Length: 165
Image (cartoon, rainbow, N blue to C red):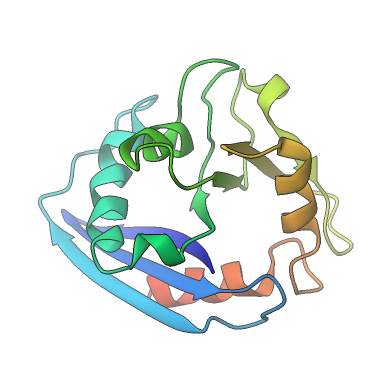
């Protein structure tokens, strides 16, 4: 199964949501949530310090051997060598689960580690990166996910659940 994770913050509380699905699914097969208090403040360039504890809390609720790939809302690298959220997550999971980063905005200096993926009729790409798997394969997976818009339907649903919509 594929696991996608998103996190929403309100004051010092994080709502962490994960969805389990297979590539051909349009909607999640399972939704897992966790609320965490006392999360780190956002620090530019150190986003992972805020997000990683949330991801790891969710991972405790999931049988890791079931997970083929983990999708995070962010970049794998902050530049062409330094880990971003995806890279730090991969390390924290002992390099056992390939990570795909899907971001809505580019990061200033990671062009060699990102593919721009245009979906639907959007003129704005998604910025896809990966670790533990070939970038070309990650790009294909995101390109071929269900949904006719820029953001795949499952990731849109994940965002809605995370924000309580």
